[in-house]
Length: 105
Image (cartoon, rainbow, N blue to C red):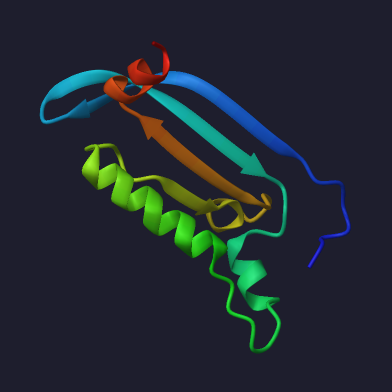
């Protein structure tokens, strides 16, 4: 259900030091945030009988990919759970060097 206010999406791309097995690597991090109603509120507003699978399927696939590629598990956050004055959802993906080098060839 729309929140009634103008929606914004913020995309951030940056390199971040991540330690894996006592070694530090430069991971390429993608942060996607919006100012929607958030995951928790969206669950409350879902229609009777409708089971939304989109986010769940994406989460499951990203978790499988992260295990296979030894990447940090993607983060899906409801921003208002961290700060009551915030609204929206944030997703953080960290891509290891061997993966972003593949795309850079």
